[in-house]
Length: 139
Ligand code: HEC
Image (cartoon, rainbow, N blue to C red; front, side, top):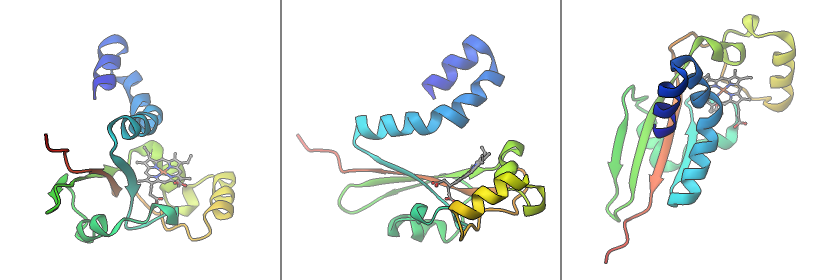
């Protein structure tokens, strides 16, 4: 959010879109390492089976929540699940199979033979970010 706000102020909102698309994954990885949290993306229609939800995430996304969900476990762990909606530019790779350019379709077939993540329209609920925060150390 800090990076987004800085770019919006300096370069305008159009430039800030790149923060979401390109920098967000890098930022989340850096934050994950720095803060000791675990971050991932998942979906009820997966492209990459490695993005399968962990059990605690699975229990929440079974209901396909459209708003952010926050959970605490008995051991003090904290979890957040944040919906991801598709923008028009996502449809090149997640839209209806006929609308996906042939070279993209071929690559998807090669790398993701069990791809279930096509056939979407703009603004559809595509999946969720999840964040797992370990219990705070007590003083
Ligand atoms: C250039 C093609 C391309 C575009 C454009 C694209 N994606 Fe994807 N998407 C992929 C690929 C490839 C994967 C599998 C990534 C992996 O191996 O973890 C993926 C995976 C995902 C996942 C993780 C869940 C899963 O099914 O594995 C989500 C969520 C997602 N995309 C959302 C989006 C959103 C939102 C946009 C637009 C902002 C978008 N994608 C644009 C190709 C694309």
